[in-house]
Image (tube, rainbow over all chains, first blue to last red; front, side):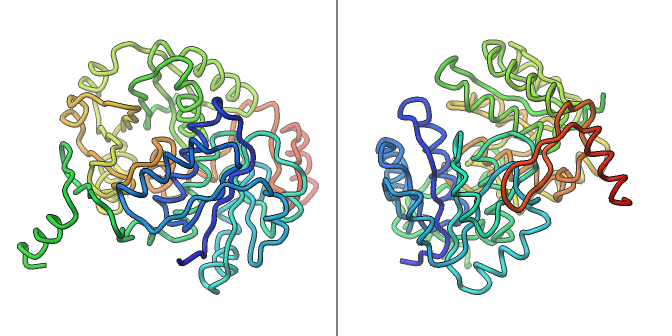
Length: 189
Length: 189
């Protein structure tokens, strides 16, 4: 698989962090990352993300690991650590883009929960703040990915989905992807 | 106060949703909204958001209400409902911008949790999907606001803060805003 942009979640408290960790993974998938790495005690979040990928398509990989620090240290490519203490995303996004998607260099995006060890600040090529305000690691990841890909992630096509949502002005429409393809043929597109 | 962009959270289950609702409110604050309206059973989230505003600055208002449907129906301005079933954000963002920040029209952004009643789909001027994939209402709100404001929200100055984070390449630096002003003078800026 393509494995150019990987999101690594540092820290997880089972129960308390389940939804935040799940949302980190689902946001990574929806907004163009290829893989998410979760702490090995986040099995429930991993299961939810895999289930969404099975239904809504991929490719997208979910991995559980217990060596987040070593994995980051040994990453062959660029490391971004998202933190409210970092440099302003609007100031560094072009450099990050040049050092990753534009130069075919693998990018690891580290998303902390509470209390990220100082190692991650030091191992990162870029400590990046989506604002220097306290808000949400999910929001920070979302804005970072949308800016990294300059919106192209929104045009992604999904493979092996067994359902597809058709954008509607009002209401909900979910179809079988084969049906959607048939409709597009019918529309002459 | 300026009250041009208001985020309304629909639905909250105390305990289970506390962190998501808090993150919706903090994201609204950090990314340029003027006010967040939470369900009246989300008092703990409201307290956290107010506490952050006290420390990191405003203006930003937090309100608890129990009349989310009527409030949305009676809104004098434009209503956007964020939903994975809606029109693609990249297709409608210019229209939404023209009908809100560019024409000085108040904008209400409805952010659902689970099971949003059909009323909201009908009352909305725009049902908007930040992707048509399941991910996170916090991520959807973040990308929507960043696109609505075209990044200008990241340049916001905060009033009445008692601390300010100074962007750093590595590490953490938090100062008293008076000290930061003094430094800017010292830098000749």
